[in-house]
Length: 164
Length: 213
Image 1 (cartoon, rainbow over the protein chains, first blue to last red):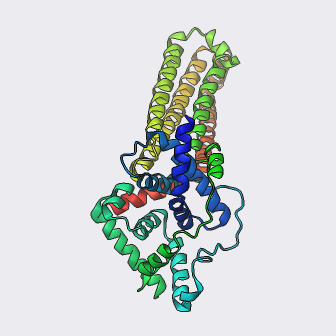
Image 2: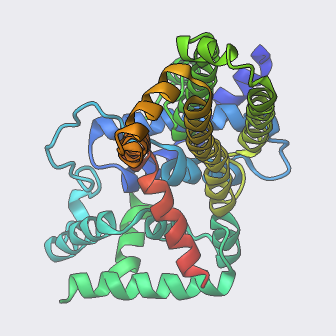
Image 3: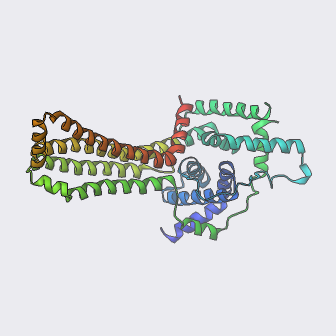
């Protein structure tokens, strides 16, 4: 593949890398795994890049490939991943608006989301990213109505985990 | 605010909190090789096609086959060989065409379905080989019983002693045990390899289908 294509890809990916990081945050539970999935998603995006014609935004296209990699293509590395709990909230609060109770709730929420299955995580991810149901249904290949129904069920499920 | 909306607030607030990967690091990454499940399925499938073809190829020059040639039963064996090759080409072509359809830009359901379809072709080829192996064994046993002078004489001897049925029984039992072992081993191999590799894929596919019921 030409150097130009490579350069254009690397620049666009670098600018949009938070999409991948966010997916890794939901689908992995350790720093090593995060890096591993990040790398696999990058490779899959690069492999699919020649077919990207710029009809949609790079980010929209990247969402789909990245999610597909996390749900389907990624094979968890067999190397031992540190068993230390990866604190997903560790750099996520600023001191001035620190609210202990809310912080605990958020921690619990992250924990609960991590317990969901791969497909449910994908729905939660797109919800957190403010994607509409049309895009959710197109990305996963399910109907819009059923995506909505499933999302409501997940919300209920998470609510129950927080307030048993 | 509760539940997911609370999480969304935190999610948005920390959107840019990730340690950034540099362009140089991305360059390095795209030159590394993928370890995706599709790549593994492709490699294992190629090995399977190679292995089954190799078994058939090695059998051709084996002692048993040389002995067979002396029975002059080419009219039975030739169609078998030809069918074997035609089926190999058919399945390999189908497998390859399905493999080419796999694209990470499809929606998740289509993507998983295409991976499963690709895998299914190899699976069908293996089943064909097992059935083909069983039918061949039956034909080979029959030919041996009717053409091999040593066996004919032995049966004749047993017949005179009134133990003809017994020798047939033992002979078929041996063939049956051998085939059962052969099928059992292949089944075990598949459970192990693909159980590990495809479990998650099937689980996610079922989940997607369930949502759309």
